View 1 (cartoon, rainbow, N blue to C red):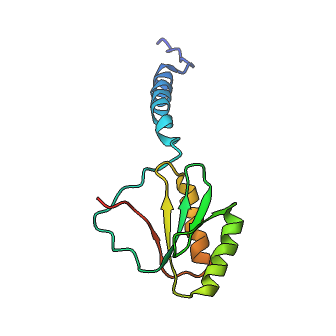
View 2: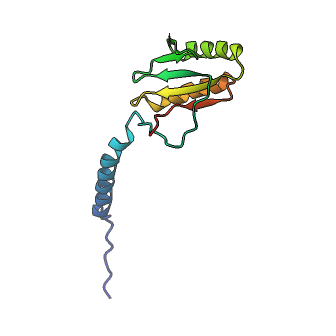
View 3: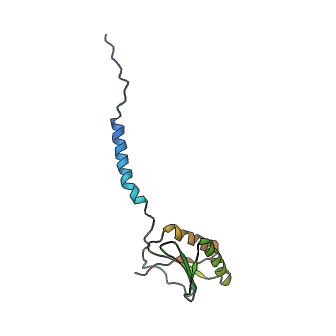
Length: 133
């Protein structure tokens, strides 16, 4: 009887096919994951603004401004200075509401940082300002 000879090779063609498919998937998906800003929607069901509030505005470049209850604007030079301003506002009025207004091209992380600082300062009423439909 004749013995069969064993082949000790691995066919790599299916592995190359799988790798090429994965490469194409990642090439298509990667540009979608690198967007830096969020387009904030307008809201038709948002409650009315409170009578007395302070607005923190975040511009496209990440700079901050605080508008007091009279509408007077003060520029803030970063999140650390904002922390001090919010602490002073909290001492002046315990029940003050804070509205955070982000420009259309504001990075989402800037909005979250301002929200965190307002909550850490102890404000109970913190909201996002949206445009009415």
